[in-house]
Amino acid sequence: MSPIRTARPTTIRDLQQADGVLEEIARLRSDIETLEEQVQHHINRVRSEAAVRMAPIQERLNDLEAGLKHFAWSHREELFHGRKRVELIFGTFGWRNSARLQPALKTTWSDIRDRIKNLRMHHGLRIREDVDRAALRKWSDEELNRIGVRRTHQATFWYLLHRNDSIPKALRA
Image 1 (cartoon, rainbow, N blue to C red):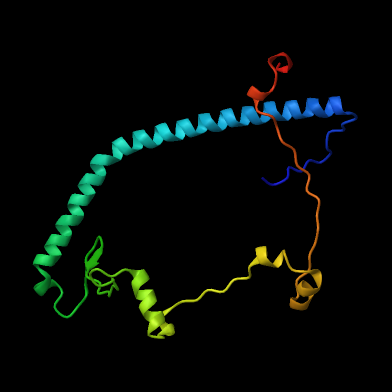
Image 2 (cartoon, one colour; image 1 turned 180 degrees about the vertical axis):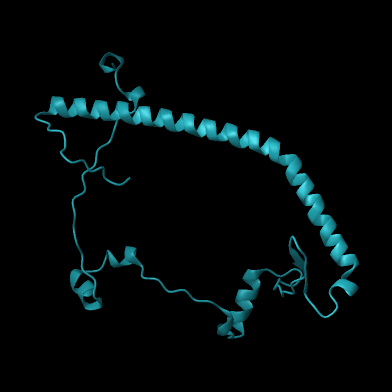
């Protein structure tokens, strides 16, 4: 979560007041969570209603697309003789030629990768190199300086709110 910036922060003078601020923050976050849940519930309801209303439209759309595809396939000789598409007033349809690579029967992409390595056909492999920052954190500052990295330290303020069920009932408002 990104830090919340205010023009002038609330002044807190002691731990009792700090605890009161944490209580108010917890209450406000709870209010926000409640509103977000209501919004999500509303969105889910609208999506459900829309899905019901869209189902017959989608069914008709699928039927029309299948009919157009069948028409194009059954009349391909006359429609596509010397061309790849047919342009009409309300749209264009046609066929695209594309090549797909698939593993042969009883072969997986993992098997293929291993065969490429064994045959030393490395031009068929993609090798991705990234800086391993987790490993760099273990290096000394001298090693980091040699490669052009500097270690910086920063203090980040944080707070943790206790869940409502972990607060004694006597203290809850």
